[in-house]
Image (cartoon, rainbow, N blue to C red; front, top):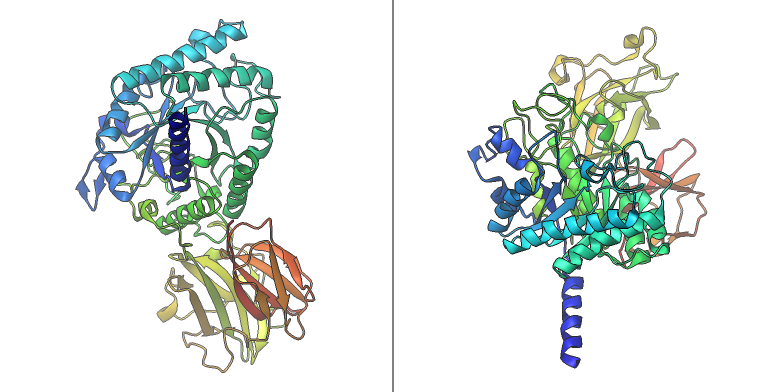
Length: 564
C-alpha cells in the first residue's frame, strides 16, 4: 500500500512540475487540407515539413479539432485527425484532441449536436452516446499508439452543449450540462488515466463565473481550465488576461491554459474569403495596420502574462490556414491568411520565434517615444499637436496635444511597440474640418519620408526621440532635456508585491499616473499618495509619472510587480 501511495504521489508531483513549465503549441487542424490543396510550407525559402518547422521552433503540443460526421468537408474526421496525430507523434510532439461533439463548428453561439443524435430525448441516452463515442475514438487511437496527452471535452462551451437545432444556448442548464461533460471526462479517463481533460470557454473574463457555476454544480473531475483569447472579440488587454489566469488558478487549484488565440500580421485580404481577424484586433500601442513585429510582440507579451501568472502558455489557432485555390463554405481561399504564422508565399514568419523565447525574462517589446517640435516664431495660440499612424486607425488619425516645456519647444510622450513604423506630422489644429492643411507644417522633401509629405518614425531603441524645428529637417539643438530633471521621487520596495510605497513627490505635482509598459493608463492618484494597494495588479513592469497641471511630466519611475 505504501509503495502504491508513493507511486501516486510521484505521478502527481510529476504532473504538477510539468504543468509549471511553459506548454506552447499550435493548432494544425488545417494542415492536411492545405497540403492536399497544393500548399508547400517553407522556412527561409526552402520547403520543410510543417510539423518539423514547429517542433524546431519550440512548440510542444499540436491541437486538432474533431467533428462527428461533417457533411461540408472530408476533413476534421477521425481519419483526418489520425493522419495528423501520426505526423505529430513522429517528430516527438504531444497532442491535444478537441472534441466539438458536433458535425461542424462549436463555439459560444453554436453548440449543435450531431445529426445522428438529434432524435434523442432521454438525457441518459444522450450522455451514454457522448461516453461511447469518446471512448471509441480514444480507444481506437490508443490501439494505434496515438493516445493524445490532452483531450478537450467540448469547444468554447460557454452555453448549453449538445443542443438540438433551434434550442436555446442560454441560460445554462447546469444539471444537464454537467451530466454530459462528466460522460466525456469519464470516457477519456477510462481509456487512459494519464489523459488530461480540459473544459474550454471563450473569453478569460468568463472563466470565473463559468467555472464557479460548474464547481457549484459538482463538475470538478477535470484537469485543466481552457480559455480562448482573441482581442478582436474579447475586449480586454493582455494584463487583464494575466490577472484572470492568476485568479482562476488560485481559486480553483487547476492549471490554466489559453488553448486558442490569434492576432493578425497584416490587414490585407488576398482572396475572396473574408478574413475573420482585422485591424479590430489591434491592441492599444501596437502597430496599426498590423505588422509581423506587432504579431510577435503580442504573442511574446501574452505568453509572458499567462506564464508569469502561473498559466501553462498558449495554443495558436490555425497558423497553417494559408490561402489556396480550395474553397470553404463561404468563399475561395482562407479566412485567416493574414493571421497565420506564414506569409502570403507560405514562408514561416519571424513572429513564430515567440515559441522558443525564455519566459522567465519579461520581453522588452515597447519603447518610450518622445515627439518634440521647436515653434520659435510660429503662432501657437490654438495649441500644438502631433498626429500620425500611432494615434488611431489607418482611416482615422487623432490629434495629440503637445505640452510647452519651455524655450518654445512642445513635447508629446507615448509608448509604442518596437518594430512599429509609420507617418507623423506636427500641426496647429485638432480637427480635420475646413482648410486644415494651412495649419500643418510643410515638411521638406529631404525628411518627408512618408508619401513625400509626412515625417517617418521607426521604433527600434528603448527610447526614441523625434525632435525637429517646425517645417524643417533641422533637429532641435537645445539645453532642454527630453526627460525632465529628476526629483527625489522614490517608489519602494522595487520590485514590489501587494503594496507599493511612494515618497518625495516633485514640487508642483498635480497628479500621479500609472501606466503599463505598453503605455496603457492603469490608475490615477493624487500627488500626496503615500502607498498603493497593488495586490490586484498583474505582474510586470509599470511606469509611474508625476505631472503638473499642464500634464507636463515632472518625474518618471519604472517599477516591477513580482508574481507570487
